[in-house]
Amino acid sequence: MALERLLTARATGHPCAPVRSLVPDIDAAYAVQSAWVASEVAAGAVVVGRKVGLTNPVVQAQLGVDQPDSGVLLDTMECPAGTPIDIGRTLQPKIEAEIAFVLASDLTGPALEPADVAAATGWVVAALEIVDSRIAGWDIDIVDTVADNASSGLFTLGSRRRLDGLDLAGCAMTMRRGAEIVSTGSGAACLGDPLNAVAWLARSARDRGRPLRAGDIVLSGALGPMAPVLPGDRFDASIDGIGSVSATFTGRRT
Image (cartoon, rainbow, N blue to C red):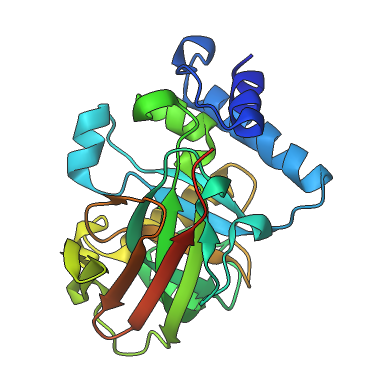
């Protein structure tokens, strides 16, 4: 029932009621997520990576959880840099600036600590994630968001660089809507360091039988507050030491 409710929301463009009363626990929520991913892959989509959510302790406290969650990135979610994004592809979009990791090797070992993530990283990339919820009014708890693929929507990638010598926790971020600053933060907002977030994901993915692999794109979590998105908006984010990324939204909401 939960999967059908979320599928209907996606198909009609109309957000649905929360699904938490239909999903007994977080493991069942991940099963709903996996079933949706499987349906997308069967329709031709390709898994290109993962995302980490709920990396900010304040947001965790709001939802009454003590750990992050994760979702799956598909090729159909990636928006090419410089190409306007049709806002009609989303229901209730919000945007946040993140550091993405592109892995150069698998993360399958027994420990999977931040140092292992650093060694496996080919590139770090300035990224914007357009988060979205199929749940009306973003009325979510941990089970709702996990079942809904960790409230994933779209993403776009910008500047990239090697990790060598870069202090990710200290990387300051500024995101603007036009000339207005709408979000600031740093890597420290992401579980203390984005490497910590990806290490958590690597362990969780391994334990669930779907380890992170070379070539995966990993969105490691927001560096600052997210901002709502409206048609016509342009967002530009800069992350010290990494570079910049932008997104422009066209069209209209359904």
